[in-house]
Image (cartoon, rainbow, N blue to C red):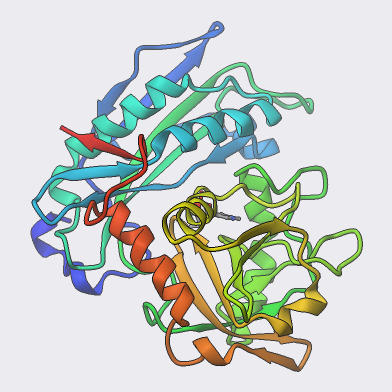
Length: 341
Ligand code: PLP
Ligand code: COI
């Protein structure tokens, strides 16, 4: 598809093939120099470790068009760092973090025509990913790997844009049986495909996953962390070793505390206290900050009066400040914005 055919203001969260992607291959114990290429297809052995044992992981970040026409990325160094952590947990060689940021810049620059115009609500989503490529049949990690980044223009993650969503408390655990949730691994997400399908069939936008051991504490959703606002305006975010350390959530906590002067608590959140919060939202690269209006727990409903029809006032303040920083309408803390030249 040419960028001229794209209706930027009406994009959903889907894949649109763009012109360029980055690839680097790991063989004989080292990464090659890498290149920006045009071919979107990957040809691998049927026995590649990625197919047999799901040795794969990914990241997600965005490039934004500013009001004066520049292109910027938001904290790509943190994606590089988190992907290196994920890679180590999956016995994959981390892609060097400085080269990760450089590769992000190259892919965005090459696909500059696909960075949506300012004010359309759309952005260019970047998907760095890595996989074990050589044939492996006994259960063990691969020796050869491929690191890639592709780009696709996207609109809002949830249908209806900024309208509050309804989610359900899931009966399933989000993390893979032998895995942990705090890495962005293919298998974590494969295990969440069944529960998200059930949720969608029942008319819910997402699942609220509880902790696997006691099912009493709030973890996260399939693709975003939670933020809660108490009645006295404190930001509360769940703390757990088995949820993804969201870059958006960490940024929101910083913004709340240091820019908006709010009280911030990053702590375990009991499901039983959720009914007492004034506002609830989901945060992530794809979700940005999406308000949650209602949570359904096996027929029992918890609703957030402040955010039933539109974003609650505190969530809105956080949303405006975060997106203002990401689009360079507001000053960013040191190092958060990386310019694509
Ligand atoms: N939690 C999960 C399971 C995710 O897939 C994502 C998306 O990246 C997030 C949280 C949010 O993380 P981030 O803000 O770094 O995009
Ligand atoms: C992201 O926000 O980047 C995600 O990975 C969420 C989802 C698309 C898996």
